[in-house]
Length: 403
Image 1 (cartoon, rainbow, N blue to C red):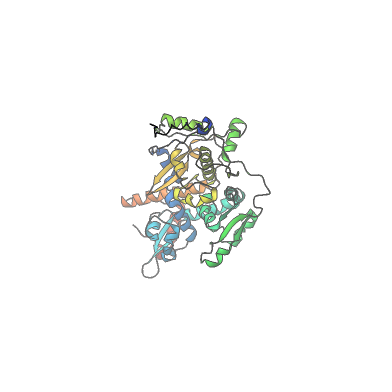
Image 2 (spheres, rainbow, N blue to C red; image 1 turned 120 degrees about the horizontal axis):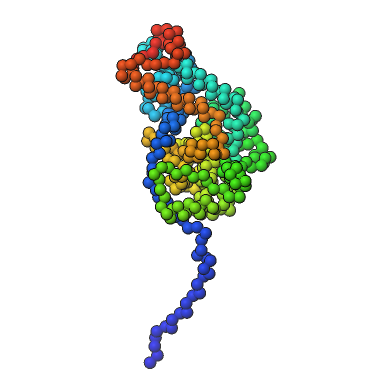
């Protein structure tokens, strides 16, 4: 009787082995966050959450008393940590002096002499180093493949770059002399927002000059004499240990080719280790342009599509704790570039001209904490000698209110 069973099929030929070989496989990097107290001891980082609102209010107020109603409705745009602008002003008596208004006992505020001097120093520093400071905005635009940024995005980066936040609004700044121009698209007609539909570009579109070297490339040239191999400077925190497989992955990651943030990256496969190394290099270059080499993490989300970063690029900060540090402060997260604070003189990152002014603002905030502490303990507040002379010259309506 004939069997109904089918004869076995011949086995299919296996594909070549090379199809399964990868240069580097993805390694899932998960590490617990490790606190580093050395960053909390840096005043300009410890007070980073309130630094921008304080400087913005200092620009809005003047040495002469101003009613709080003039700034009380700006809380949302200033993003003060307090629910009321008046409460925020009272937290910094070394910068803002409170007084009683001429009618209805409404609070008035004026700049202290120390804050007024800082305001003038900030303007002088920008005027003296304008070319250096505005060149950082130019480099940020060159990092974008389109060589332009939406004006709202560029506006949000001015504080981090050390440029006055009214840089685009005041005609006397004349952004054209710095090589910038504002382009208007068709969407601007149908929006009430004055910046909607506008883009910031370069007058020469970045075509008349050679692309700049990144900070990492300049560091490699300084250390090795060439930029053929560009490893990241690593700065492990105390007590932070990597697993062996993660350490091996990091060693191979350092040997991968480094793509400059200013080069074309269209031929790089998304999700590969080379793509991740480019993302780390872009963020490293971005932080090196900022005044404090740090920024609130959520502030960087607007740059994602314009710098060619992946949707979950924020995971880079967690996967590379030897390069970035996550500073958790007042219910928010700041990202700090470790090289700027731990490399000492062995770094190619140039100190921002506005850093000293920001540090003085932070010291003014520390003085405010000391004044409030002494008031609560019943001790007289120790004011700056010039502040004391100014207090004595004021009339009854400008007398400081004791807390």
